[in-house]
Image (cartoon, rainbow, N blue to C red; front, side, top):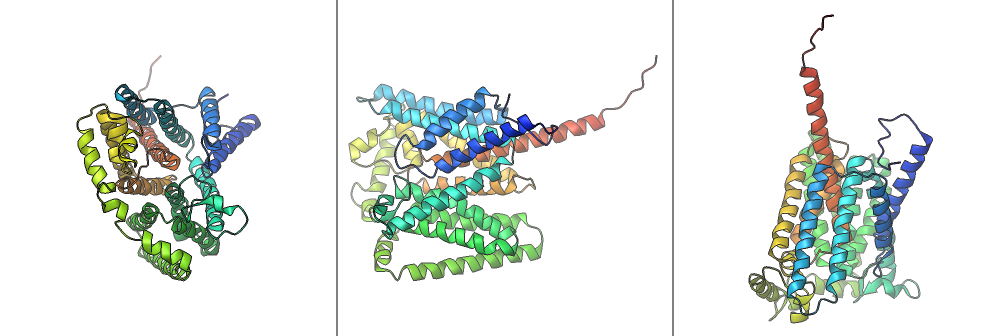
Length: 424
C-alpha cells in the first residue's frame, strides 16, 4: 500500500485515510525534530532516515523534475568522495560525506512528498513554526538565565536554543517568521495579534543569536518577500494594506529593539556584533584573506582538499560556501553546486508569481534560497538541515508546476482531437 495518496481523486477509504494521516504525522514529527539538534546524530537524523526508507519502500515516486534535483545532488556528493584520494588522513571524511549525502536525500524526499500532495507544504510550515517558537523560547530563556541549567541553550553569551551553534539557530528561525509575516499581511485582522506575538518571539530569538548572517537574512528576506507580494497583488487597496502593515511592523520591531538595547548585557554585545567587519574578518590571515588564499589553492587542486582539511591548515574553516564547495568537493562539485543553486532560483523566479495553491510557500522558499546564497559569502551552509528542507520544498513546487503544465497540455490536446464517426 502506497503512502502517496491523492484523496481528492479517490473515493473515501478509511484504510487509505488512516495511512495518509499516519504519513502526515511522520512528516510533521520529522520537521518538529529539526529544531532540536543539540548533539549528533540528532533525533532528526534518526527519524528522517527511518521514514525516508519507509516512504520509498511503500511507493513514494520520484518524477523527472525531482530526479533532476537528485542527479545534481548525487553528482555533487560523489565528486566529494574523490577528494579523499588526496587526503593524508581520511578518518573524518566518510562521516562527513555520509552526512552530506543524507541531507541531499532529505531534499529529494521533501520534494517528492510535496509533489505528491501540495497540501503537505502547509503542514511542514505549521510544524516548522511550532518547532521554531519552542527552540527560540529556549534560547531566549537561556540568554536571560531564566532557570537553573538554562545556560546550555547559549554559547559565547549568545542564544542558540536547542542547536549547537548560534549561527545556525538564528537562520533556522527566519523561514517561520517570514511565513507568519505572510499570514499577517494576507490574513484576517482578527488573527493579527497572535501572529504578531509569534513574530516577536522569533525576532527576539534571531536578535539574541547575535548572528550577523541571521540578521541580514531576516532583513533581506522580509524586504524581498514584501516586494514580491506587491508584484503579485494587482489591486491598489491590497497593495496599500501590505505596505501599511509592513511599515507598521518594521516600526514596531525597531521600538522593541530600542527597548532591548537598554539592557547593558544586550547593548554591549550588539555594538560589537553590529560591526560590518570584525577584527577576525579583516585581520592578517583573517576570514577575507583566508578566502583569497583558499581560492588560489583550490585552483591548483581539481579534486579539492577534502573535508575539514582547510581548517586544519589555517585553524579556521572556510566560512564561505563557494570556497567550501571547491575545497571539499573539488571543481566538479563546485560547478554542480552552482548549477543546482542557480537553476533552482531561475525556475523558482519563473513560476512564483503564478496563482497556484502552493504559491506562498514557493515565494518564501525562493526568497530564502536566494538569501542563503548571499550569506554564503561569509558563512558555510553546507550542512544546514533547514537549507535542504527549503531546497526540497522549492523543487517540489517546481515539480508541481511542471505537472500542472503537462495536465493543461493533455487536456488541450484531448479537446483538439477531432471526433470521427465510424460506420458499421
